[in-house]
Amino acid sequence: MRTGRFIVFLAVLALPGMLFAQEKKDTVSQDTTKVQHVIENIKNAKVPKRLLKSITRKSQTNPTQAVKSEDAFIPFEGKIIRHIEVRHIGFDRTVYDTTRNIKNTVSRIGNALHSNSKEWLIRDNLFIRENKALNPHKMADNERY
Image 1 (spheres, rainbow, N blue to C red):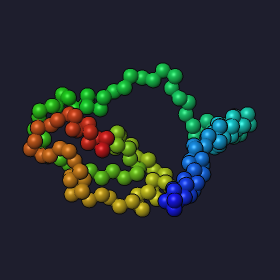
Image 2: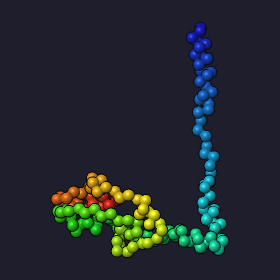
Image 3: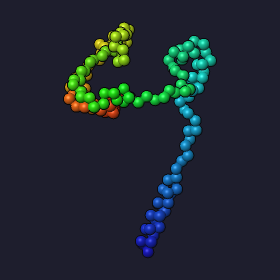
């Protein structure tokens, strides 16, 4: 008789827990950041409109066809890598055109605060090695990495 009462007691304790275990509906029905609303309000004003245009870009309506990054390295596939040279480029130059210098306060501050990576660290993180055949896919992956 006691075990029966004990089982009923446990059932009574467990039932309310099952009732509250139901999943609640999502109460957020719209975007709470309201970024789009702020942008729409700025578009109506003259001076902020110019500022908004200077810091944002329009999305492309017809995107160009994607270019595979390994396409640039395919002509060199299978060639032996003789030497790997590590060059340190500061904030005042771009990777694509190192002859063009960008002299402004931000680049000077960046160059003063930034310390160059160690050459051995860069070499350890390369997927390619000297005196090995070039694999364009590894080279492209390394470019992304």
